Image (cartoon, rainbow, N blue to C red; front, side, top):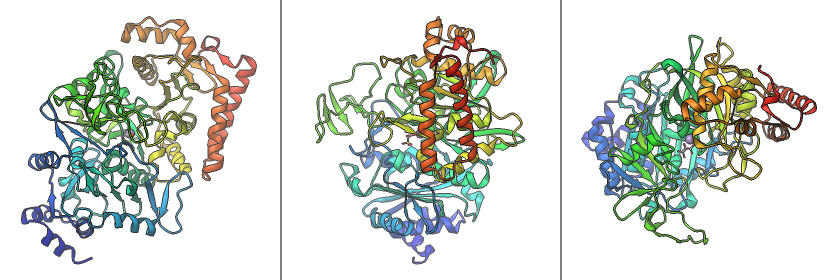
Length: 626
Ligand code: SPV
Ligand code: MN
């Protein structure tokens, strides 16, 4: 590479040069210079995260047609290409240096080959365009949790989204001086056609764990491009593993118990399985809905939201089920909608918003009218199932006041949830930390959704709902989770939840609102305020306690029949599940901790004993208080 200083001075205006020069960080300067040489932009804009710079980015997004202005002040809509609507797992790969191994569950490519390939797609990709250089911070600023990041992109939509989703990081870069400890992201949309990435076959997201660097090219969908979101989670998991903390696919929220008590929960659910709506439950307060860092301090588990905004799924957000988000999406304020349907009055519409959807408008397929089909003959839905909104948590009426607490909040409970139609009860507490990590987290399975490219409704193993983002061997990751609580006197309690349990006819056994009761029961358990019934797999609520919570919080008479149907322990399904998951560990995860196999065996024995003494399907009324 030519001289770093020379490149920057030649290719940046004086003003932009000064912004960069104020940060005395050779590694960062080298990254910028290399990106300029490689992608060859017409101009470079450096953002310091000021209101003026953010406004420049917002305007640029509109000017270039990456965002369309909607009818409400502050609202815009972005479209991704028709085949670029979700995370591309198959083209997201680790750049593997010779001799290193991640296990066969993680997607990787030989580093030299991968770097060459992705850099060939990035070559001159910003010609005729402007490069945006932005600084952000993962986690609250000035905190042990903070990780400074630099994002380079030619997409003002990506940069704009990041100004909403992440805390500004320019000042953080001033503070770190010449430290090399930060994450780097280089993204280019590649060639565009009608403002969307054209060369989808050359979509690549390649991750260099040695360099804390991610390349993303020929894509626009946020999950593939917004470096600080899932791409940073991968880098953070590796960092956390080295340093003894945890980076998780988790919401963080305050559950409001009796007499004003607030107990914080962190919850991991696969994408599109109720994570955001749990973090947004009425009467509770939200810290974050997607990514959390957990660290230990003074013998306590503490956590922060890595983000400050939400990139949430629009589908099914309506005034009744998600009143807080619905309100934020229908009043003036900064919101980027993506892949929704826009009507002739520039109003956004999405699936499940309850009001009738228009018969025509503009969506991710261009001009759309009811009945339109794609080139494969599939009917195009008015808005995509993975259509999203992006907004500031600050604009929600239920923001928890400790969102930016640099110390994080104390974790009272951890919740693992999946989309499971036939096995797990709606809520169950693990007997202890290790069983929680193994029987709830590491055994998690979930049916696939529209958040990733591929078929929906297929039951897939997804440990801790974090499988898509793991950057270390699976066994090591499980061991890190087990070890995390080893020196914590009162570790958080661990719960599983399942909002998707069905009866034999395929009907859901629960209403959408019921999750509030499961959460508030968990809140009581964390504080020692409710008894529980012992099952072979954990501890479930007593009927009386749930009936009280249903009455108090949902004004609902909870019947014994509902309780029976929901909390019957399904022994054959639980046994099958253990066998299914164990097989995956035995076949694919060479470094599985022995404790996992031992714990599976313990639980299997308990299930079989109960099956012999009682039956295949055990009524909770037949079990006793633990
Ligand atoms: C998810 O799919 O889990 C998301 C959205 O939170 S993204 O990862 O950005 O695609
Ligand atoms: Mn997510």
